[in-house]
Length: 301
Image (cartoon, rainbow, N blue to C red):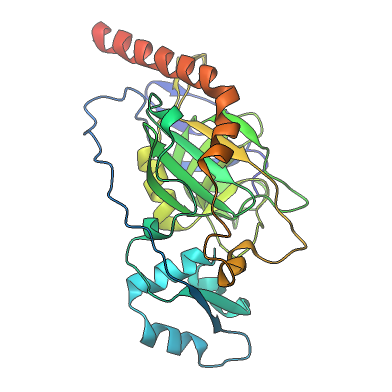
């Protein structure tokens, strides 16, 4: 979705030009200083079934939907369908769990733990096949959510990357009507990042990783920026990000397979391990380098 970015003022520490979106406000947290320790959430997995809620051709669908479910339940249901409220009336139907929990993590298709990541502080996975992301801390799942990734014409590049700069708001240079909130760049040269933008229920972006606003904000606050010098020399990378898999653009939306098999979208530990294991040494090397850079900066103050 995003082609070229002008990256405005990062902070007083550095200024840079980038090729993706032109930004308005940005923040800088690259020193990792005095951040509170996160508590790994307890996740109670949903074990029920799913049904359909017809929308197309039903003039009262939205009114019925809002009357039947609380605001929090509505959000969970829309997230499971990879849509936002602006696209509610554009879908044919929705999948709805028999019991709508209030924690999106209860419906995670990702494993709760990855033992081979216990030494990795933070990592994010974006799964093309199911249009979803998962964030892990020391091998424990802390959050997952829906995504709308690159379209068939503009696919998102797969593989390992690292978060770099972020901005609360960016206006795309490709289209000045595209306001990208909570933008976090992950591929500087290509101008690819995650951010809040319309979620239509299928991969529709211009190579970026669209998110619901609450998820974009969560990742914006959670992930780390890179550390750079004033001349834009990169001293340390940010949070590792792995985009993997392929999407069947002509097939059934993956989440509708849950109607027949509630575990149809599950991604196993072996599958994720296959994705990150070849990159694990680089991830750990970059993590150690970052810690040394942060310690050095702290000592020099």
